[in-house]
Amino acid sequence: MGARHIFDGRHRGAPGIAHGGAVMTVLDDTVGMLLYVVGEMAVTRKLDTEFFAPVLLGVPYEVSAELVSRTGRKLEVRTELREEATGQLVASASGLFVVVTLDHFTSSIQKASSIRCTARPPWEG
Image (tube, rainbow, N blue to C red; front, side, top):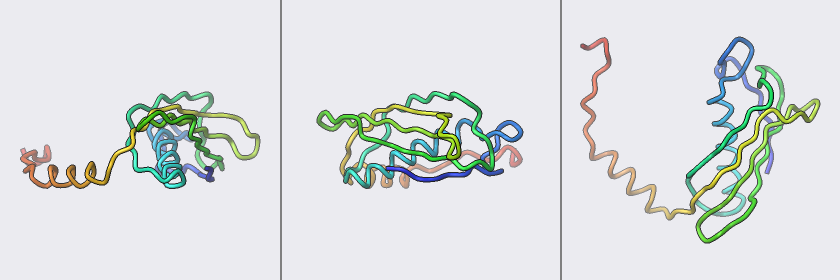
């Protein structure tokens, strides 16, 4: 499973460089797309990310994900981000995803809707 991604100003961390959290989100979302291909609903249990070079804004990258193995409900995955022009590996992640049923999501929605948020923004003192 693969895609093309260009980080822009919305993803800025340091000047000219994508924020690491934005990079990790793209890697995680690419695995999410892989799950559609595999035909499973699963959630992230663990995602270990490594950065090998700065991920630059405005540069095209290729992002890919693969299913490494499956043991019961556990899916071991790997995802990579490479500079499109050079093929240089700039970030990668390996992780564990756990297959869930639709009930996992519906029960979470019900639980969240039953919780009343009492937090106030700081400006409301």
